[in-house]
Length: 250
Image (tube, rainbow, N blue to C red):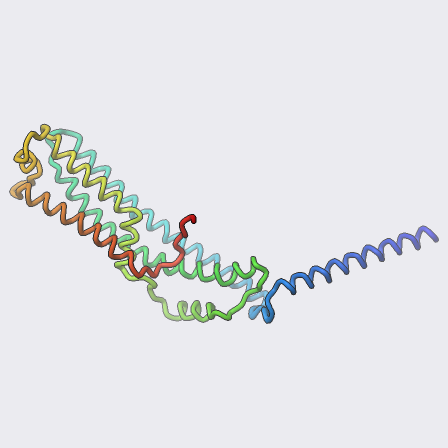
């Protein structure tokens, strides 16, 4: 009988200790949360938002893959042009000129795809900043800044968040600038060493000539082409609207 009473008292003490811990924990969490931070969403609605976030993340991943595919096309065509041009000293440098024009076409296509990718990435970043960041800080989900209205309007009326110029400029700075630089250096190396190393400016004009087009005109066109790309990349740095850019380490 005494043993039974002792066990009951021990069990009661453990239950009281657990109850005290839960009450104390609830008070600590409530003091961390800001006043009036009652969640405007029910648990079922928060679950639905979690599934929505997963869906938008999947769509952004798919469009990111499409961006990589376009870049792979540009890299592959550049490699083919280099192989053809340098496979024989007598081969024309024309493939290196054509691949630069093809790279420009791929750049525009990738810029269009990047605008679609930015739609899904913008939604993902908005939900991350407005739902998951407050949850991780124990502040609860709030709608004070109107993020839910912004997201609702974006679903009601699908639109691009950045211009085509900005999208093309971003892809040019991130990827295609290196490809165009490799193509330019390869072209200059080709006309300087093939079919024989140049010994004068006249040799340079002769090697740069493409059919009836004089070499001076080809080089001037190439110079203006690359200067235009540099100017475009610099001009599109201003007024960027794309979200989700990675901050540099400070």
